[in-house]
Image (cartoon, rainbow, N blue to C red; front, side, top):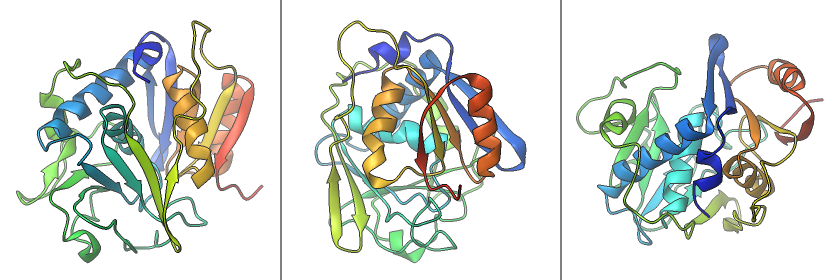
Length: 250
């Protein structure tokens, strides 16, 4: 598992839509660049088998969280996702983070959640500003401004990205491991057919489909904090919808 197929897909593959009609379309090479930059950023904090990135997803999955997850998984680290709730974010999407992983961890959160008491024990707290064109994050020096810091890293990495990382989800019964490579395609075939549409955060068992589809160069529509009808309409305009991820009301 690496970035080869994604980096070789020239057209837009990730169509992100956010609140207030925020829009960002990312090509395969651009996503690969962001993933490599993330490897550089987290690499400065000992990214490897003993590195855990906790991504609670309090506002639903954002494109910056998605590329950070790929950075850690491809470089052999561990990602733990927050407890999944009915609204597509965490179970406590209304305002706080309900649980954290056991042991040492780093945390990645959108601005506004950096001071949540639940993640006070994190070794480092990475904070991003959600608007697509935001170049910085308004946080003090105790936190890492992802929008600003990540741009200092190169678009390529000397590290071998072998996809040996592990992915897990927190839940009421404990931590569940996710076989995130289960849906990966191999060989020289083209990008996966059809479009995946994710209304906020995928369900626990849908992560392999999302990651495999995207890394294979497949087109993905991701909506964060937007009306489901808006992203469904966009997906239909783009082509044939292969599947829907996340929580939908109809």
